[in-house]
Length: 117
Image (tube, rainbow, N blue to C red; front, side, top):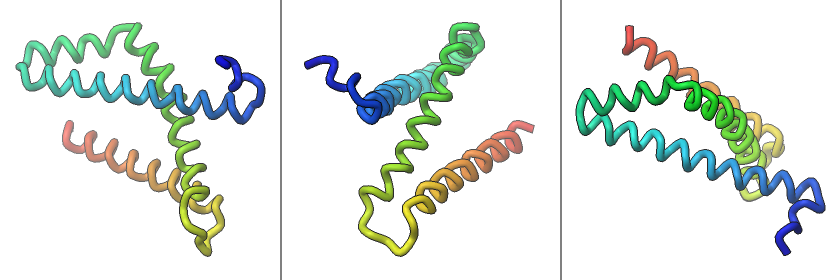
């Protein structure tokens, strides 16, 4: 029973998408720990920031980035399949969601850069 998902590529992609959700959960918990450290004071927050600069942390971020990107892409691919029928082709919905996500990420990056100047 445990290897059913290995038989077909569509099932392997599905399981990879579900596993990537675990990566997103772990990353959300890491960010939540940062907020807790921020609440506890400057020393705790500085220690958390120092932890993010270790080679292990950078390696985990490098691993998390493609998994989170894969999860986002597949999420936007599922959107047209679950929505009611629209006059817009499903591919446009997927590309529009990805483009909007990229645009908002860029806007957030610019805003953070602007505040940090």
